[in-house]
Amino acid sequence: MSTVTLRAAEVDGELVDVRVESGRITEVGAPGSGAGAETEIDCAGGALLPGLHDHHLHLLSMAAVATSVDVSEDLDRALQTAHAELPPGAPIRAINYDEMREGPLDRWRLDALAPDRVMRVQHRSGALWVLSSAALASVGAAEAEVEGIERDERGQPTGRVFRQDDWLRDRLPESGQSAWGGLVAVGRRLASLGVTGVTDCTPTATAAYFETIASAVRSGALPLRVSTTGGPALSAVHPPDPLQQGPVKIILADHALPALNDVVAWFEQAHGAGRAVAVHCVTRASLLLALAAWSETGSRPGDRVEHGAVVPRELVETLRDLSLTVVTQPSFVSARGDAYLAEVEPADRPDLYRCRSLMEGGVAVAGSTDAPFGPDDPWQAVAAAITRRSAAGVMVGADRGLAPFAALHLFLGSAGRPGGPVRRVEAGAAADLCLLDVPLREALDEPSRRHVVATIVGGQRTYLA
Image 1 (tube, rainbow, N blue to C red):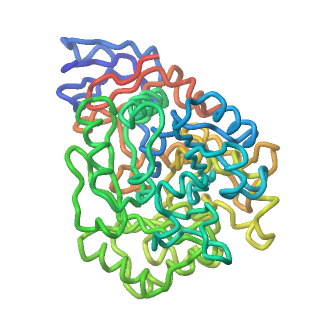
Image 2 (image 1 turned 180 degrees about the horizontal axis):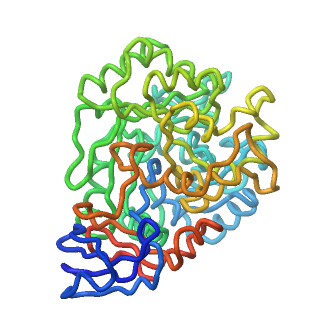
Image 3 (image 1 turned 120 degrees about the vertical axis):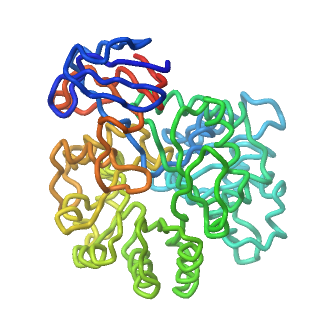
């Protein structure tokens, strides 16, 4: 599809024809212009937008979800069923464990549910894995000197392992289809949502992580523009083509916050390599630690706070003065809001997932899903940013909701400037486009993925309803 004309598309409130040549928009003109294209698409007055960009997700984790056991409804039953159905020796990888619903989980509980099975269960936050005794033996956890392995009073592993995805990935076998097959499914899913670009925010310490994704993009199996991060150890490493280099991901894990000197060193390492930092902050304490580090090192363009789950009102001015961007997940308000209101300290509840108050305070804000640890649908996030209501209909946090167009704009910034100027459908821009079945104002009355009828990346159709 080298030359395409999209006819009768609504762009910025007007009906136009949009001509695409060799992957770029060459003309936006009155209806009837752009003749002679090899392919024509009748948009029938539907809105034509820049493709959505999800500024924070985890591609290989999304790929793995397709072959994992979901324990969100009934952990015991789900694991017992998988154990009974799988052949001996086949590992089990499970996701969406929630300790508030299912109670404490350790190696001994897993052993009782599936004796002698190599099994790992991921917490819904993505920050914790719980391993069975067979899995612990497989990775050599008893002898390993690895930070994040929880031990009992006798020094034996409990099965709970924090923030060691790379270490576990190298030592535990995957189940089911390959990561490649999972990435194909992820690509199809994201294309159906109108997503044309993503930033993978995995703090990996191994360059091989990048190559898996890059090969899927090069082959067309993952039809997206992909920006990657990686942890501090990869600050000086550029990802393979065609991946774009994003900020360095830095985790401030609340179960074991690092020393300020360590955080400062990570910031300086990334900045010294000419890169920004993207700092995981989900509590008041972790945000204060990050801001203390920035006060010593200074910020550079592109520095980001990831999540910003709790942002005290008095820190908004500091975020603005440091020119930081907050990359947040509005859909957590709808998906987890009721749990937050029950579990979060009362003093922090007004500060949950600020968005509008950050913008009004001069802070740049961008949207993301944190998939697979949150719903992967950016339209759900747009709707949540507007209503700010939990599943039970309760308002979450002290913020008011965004206006519909402002909520959509959370996903229209560029990979390099999330929360910055909105990309536009205009001559010279990359032909990364999302076509809706109705005009934009009508679509934003009830934001939903059902309005997406076509997605185009680099002039190539990646989805057609």
